[in-house]
Amino acid sequence: MVQSLEGVKVLEMGSLIAGPFAGRLMAEFGADVVKVEPPEKGDPLRDWRHVYEGTSLWWRLQARNKKSITVNLKSEEGQNLVKSLVEQCDIVIENFRPGTLEKWNLGYEDLKEINPGIVMVRVSGYGQTGPYRNKPGFGSIGESMGGLRHITGHPELPPTRVGVSIGDSLAAMYSVIGAMMALYHRDVHGTGKGQVVDVALYEAVFSLLEGSLPEYDKMGAVRERTGSSLPGIAPSNTYQCRDGKYIVIGGNGDAIFKRLMEAIGHPELAVDERFQTNSGRAKQAALLDETIENWTKTVDFDYALEVLDGANVPAGPIYSIEDIVKDPHYLSREMIQSFKLNEEEDLKIPGVVPKMSETPGATNWLGPELGQHTEEVMKNWLAYDHDKVQELRHKGII
Image (cartoon, rainbow, N blue to C red):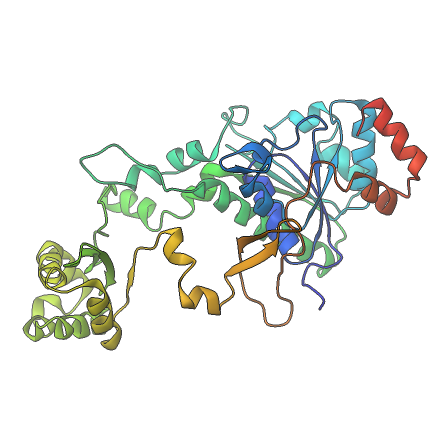
């Protein structure tokens, strides 16, 4: 089956999370993604978190469907090799600190001379311009300066983080969106010209702060940490059940609120004039939360979920990864897949998002060994013969 990005050639330069995650998303939908790694140790992600048989399991997922080649980008011959690859490319992804590729003669101005249609995705902590452009920036800093960590956690405790690299992931998604829009402009609008897609980690996070900026601008409102509640939107919270489990309930729609109150035995609140709109309910959020939890604490989680499902009230559990792999809905949607790790073992991996009816994404292979595809790419993209490849190896260029 033809995939939506089949025929699109991508050269990925960079390491760890944001840039490589963008490359992964493209590779999942058929793009030919060639990842350039340093010859010595490769992407540091190969050694991050849980290492199984010498390679990070995260790497196996992050680099799925990619081809790994090794090139010494600090050498002139390595830089020339990359330029030859760029001639064949549609997209270049990089997440070095701004100015690094320019130092290696591989900046956008250098590459567009070789290939005017190249789309260059540049991911960095602070963007390619501005007074902070030269500062090192990780996703954790982007989450902090982007405003997310200020509102994450409980008010009486220090700011906390989300349990995954959310800033990097958001930047990666914006990178893919930007790259696809740039390709559309180049090819569908027929300009033939590429462009730079400049993605800053802090801006990717900041863009998701909902109405925080206009609320502050006109009303001086500053959102703060509120734990599991969502101020201004009620009732919406996490409630403890009799068996110690927690249930998340979103009863903040007007009609939903009425069904929720009736389901938990408070029909009088369903018709109470104070609670007919969200603004009224928000003023009494603490009272409503107390009312709801007074009910949940009298029943076990499974019963609470059954009652709320029956009343068509949004509710659900808080899952660990152990819970996720057992869930029938995850399984039916093919979000838990098994792929051959080696001759004896399979590895569970997440399915591909989004689901597309005509051109679905797929896992074709797991993250490769370092330099596994160097010779293949040199031959297929550049028509180098075996002797030429061996010469480059001997020189330490690849």
